[in-house]
Amino acid sequence: MDTIVALSTPWGRSGVGVIRLSGQDARQIVSSVCAGASRWVDRRASVRQIVDTSQAVIDDVLAVWMKGPKSYTGEDVVELSGHGNPIVLSALIDVLIAAGARPARPGEFTRRSLENGRTDLLRAEGLAALIMAKSMEGVFDARAAMSGAVGDTAAHHREVLLDLAAELEARLDHPDDDLSMQSDEQVAEKLTDLGVAATAVADSWHMSRVHQQGASVALVGPVNAGKSSLFNHLVGSQRALVSETPGTTRDVVERGVLLDGMDVTFLDTAGEGGGKDPIEAAGVVLGRALSAEADLVIVVIPTHRPQDRVTDQILERSKHLPRLIVGSFSDCPRHPNALAVAFPISNVDADGVDALRAAIRSAIGSHPSQTETAVLSSQRQHDLFRAVARHCEGAGTALMGALGPAVAVTELIMAIERLGELSGIDAREAVLDRLFSRFCIGK
Ligand SMILES: Nc1nc2c(ncn2[C@@H]2O[C@H](COP(=O)(O)OP(=O)(O)OP(=O)(O)O)[C@@H](O)[C@H]2O)c(=O)[nH]1
Ligand SMILES: [Mg+2]
Image (cartoon, rainbow, N blue to C red; front, side, top):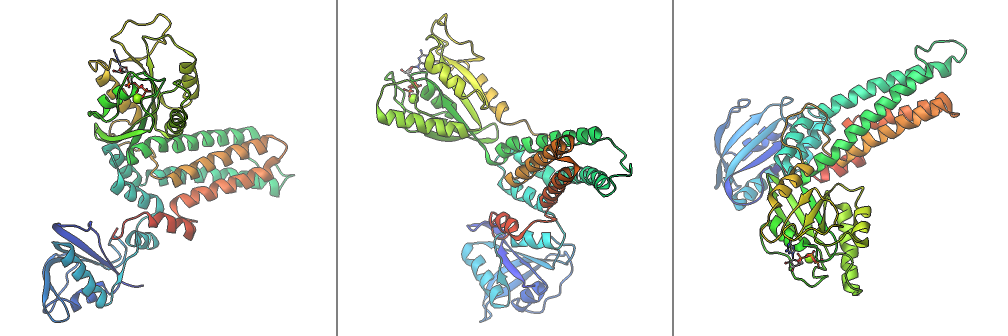
């Protein structure tokens, strides 16, 4: 196996930059570019001078050798902390490459760790999530993922499924003997329970994704509802144009802010029910498309006007989306036929905006808690748990219906395979390639 090398800290000027090498020749390669003789003691830091071919000293580095297999990758690892100047660091890497190391590919250190059984795919994804997390909740979720909670849940589901599959296989192999311990109904009931549990795990991804990637919150509503005014309050600066002309906002205006430790991107969209202007109409279409993908929709309804057809349509369209309904113009007399809303606000004096902000924050993320429950750290994990739930459901239906136990077993085997893919037991190269291409080089 080649010895690989990469900078593990970001390129740029900083106090130190850490260069990592992994592979059987790691120590020997570093020794060959050190001035003077070098002795290595496992996990003991020592200062060394790294020289180029003309023996000029490039840098003094702090070197640590971590003997395999008890290292990050499971191989011999050497970490060199050099001075954090990209010119120095790239010169160091160049001499290490000239001495026999090969530049690492993205995620290759973690991939080796996986191949050497030092981690599994779920933990590796947890690690990627930890590095990318855009909120403290995301950090805690990632830590839970790295502790193996998802793997434990998957292993438990796998055991139950293997038992049930074996139970059904027995019926198929010996249809005349009564070997089965459980009735079809009992098996079907267990499958339903498992399907529900797998769905609950899959659903947890919605929240974890927001924790990890930050949230997008779209403001929608009829024209002149005060969306842009509210948007400006929420982002804390005058970003969107406000005017009494209906249809002021056309393009979607976007602004990211840190809301109580979470990256939140607010989107102000074109109001609905304005004139027949084609550009305005195009703005409405764009706003609808983006708000359908948002993590939260804020429906802004002016409560000094009667509830009209446009409002009804907006409420109908957003009813399956996570949403909060806000009543603007709370400073004006309420119209008797206005919609009753949970969050009254006034854009004149920002009354109610703080309460709304708190409601938005709790709608998009729970507060940090180190739960032991399975928290997913990738879309891939979500899709697999969904598939498991679907196969459990399919197996139950087959068993209780005309298709019978043979089809049910096939479904169960598919569910077991999906669970295996989760931790990488059966992961194909393609999955690995996709996963590791998202890692940064040096990780
Ligand atoms: N009194 C009062 N006036 C408001 C309030 N919110 C907005 N306005 C006024 O209503 C008008 C429309 O406000 P905007 O924020 O531009 O409304 P919008 O929903 O973005 O409108 P479009 O972009 O046209 O869809 C402006 O003149 C605002 O000053 C409010 O809560 N109270
Ligand atoms: Mg507007």
